[in-house]
Length: 93
Image (cartoon, rainbow, N blue to C red; front, side, top):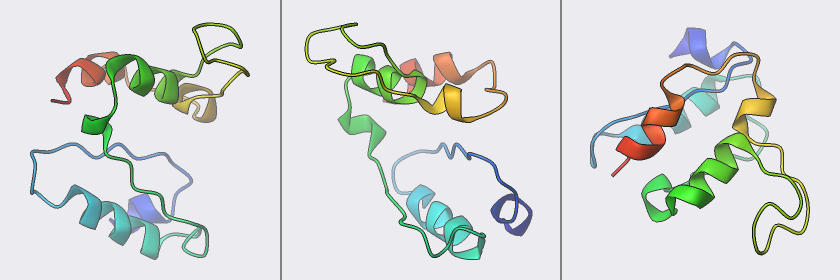
């Protein structure tokens, strides 16, 4: 966890319910250079497929009802996104 925490990376943590994903995320955050910044936990299972996709990959203004402004997603904030990320959005439940 220390090597991940000290790098400027976005980390995707996957696992079954009750395996400690949020605990691992909090540990990585507390060991990292951004430990003084806010930690925000998101329950991806609570999001619809379209909303999760929008949050991860972004959307343009007017792309759907309620999209009043453009949103930069996960993909635009990292250099390289693993090729299995789109499959992840379908496997999350």
